[in-house]
Structures are given as structure tokens and as C-alpha cells.
Length: 115
Image (cartoon, rainbow, N blue to C red; front, side, top):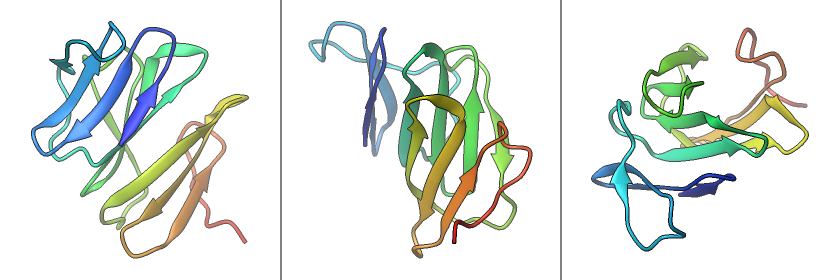
């Protein structure tokens, strides 16, 4: 999975999540990343805000990857793909490996399955 913002290009691979600050010429590991990152999304207007899908749900960082916090939802297994709304970084949509679709509009306080 790939994601980009004003300061970097992010990629996930079997070895973990990496970032490039020179349009993909060189790569470095994202510091403090959670294990097993499968998918990643960045906020277009905030280069420090990243979301990552893992085998255990969704995690978020507000400091460019130095620290991460789990934002759920509970019981989700394998966040396969995710996206952030380009006009609202609090709106995140993701799909699980089993095809379940989730959405949040309030920075992860509550989750709902869209109709």
C-alpha cells in the first residue's frame, strides 16, 4: 500500500512501513511503527497525521510516527485498506480482510458500518 502527503511517500511491505522524503529515491523505516502494518493513509493537510491498518485494527499517530495509539474498533481483524477523506482528517473509512466496511467521523471515538 502507498500513501503520500506534502512531506513524504509512505509504503508498506513485508519488512514494515517505510517513508521516502525524496520521491522514492531512498527509503527509511518509519520510527516507532506498530508491527504488521498492512495499509496506510495520510492526511493531506497534516503531514504528521498517519493512520495504519494492522492485523489487530487501526492505529493512529499525530507526531509523524514517533508514537502510535490503537483506535479500534474492537474485534476487527486485519484492516486491509483504508482512506482519509481529503476534506476532513477525522473521517476515515476502512475495509477488513473479510469485506466488512467501517467509517468514523469523530477521530476514532465511535465507529459505524455505513449503510
